[in-house]
Length: 452
Image (tube, rainbow, N blue to C red; front, side, top):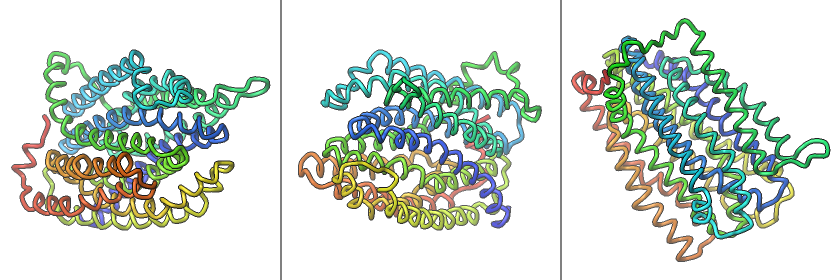
């Protein structure tokens, strides 16, 4: 595939992926906007509760991303039975993990909340949100694997349309349940969770019906029943390294957020307000990295890899361009963020101003690492990617952040500066690993990556 064809194909895959993720993150931002008039305490409670849910959803997404690589290679190979096996195995694994987390949130929610915060004023609000939001975990298990199937097939517009359906439903239902209507005053923070569950239920139904009625998607599991247990075992071994890598980063992000909760409430609220924007603003970079991994995995499945190095270079160059454009977006955001969240404490606005240079820089360095990580996973270098991420985040950045906050009681600037510092630390190792991996990759290594 020529660089021009590769670029065109990746763009066609990436823009729906980016908008998918953007709409998904927009739901959290909408909930935050709707809750913000209730004051700092509900916002802080929601920040802690959504951190817990986001951690679980991150694990589910990681499992689905691993399945997506398997599905993409199966699509490239043209073997329908491999596609059937990958889809059903991924669905069973993700749902079993989701049910485990649902049970933990049901049985140990109070222990978890008391561990995360000593502020009694937050406990009831966090608990009320989690009691409803835990059902998101079950529905997400379905939607993530459905989405991975469409992405692996190269039909990224289908999940995009699902989010277009979900977003207005989430916004309207969340508003009604948060603030009420007529003489009913609403449920506050809990209403945001109810609105999200209603919306994802409808999206799950849409994706299922699309798979069921689309005749071009020929999923059949009749020949798969006898080897179900064995196939699930092999599938899990295939996707576990990918899931472990992404889960490790997700846990690290959660620990960052919990460390930030030890700052004063104004600083913590400022970070809570910025984080959804950071996740959304960097989704275009992540989407480009995902589309690159899908295209490379399909090429590996089809054994057509003559232009592999050139296409990887194209992916990296485009990621840098998108990262710089994202930085300009955050420059604009820094001028209007105060208008987006009116009626907050002046100290919260001051904290937002202090960290503005940092959240402008972060997408640039993170985008470079993101595309390298996804390309390397497609090439089978998941363990090496894990080592780089583990070293940069867990051995360097998180201990440094804990030291800055807990030992030195430093300002929000130095606490938040650890995140871009972590990405800078990882840039050179990622670059060297990518060059070496491409030099070594051949048809023999491609054959070893084939799942079935």
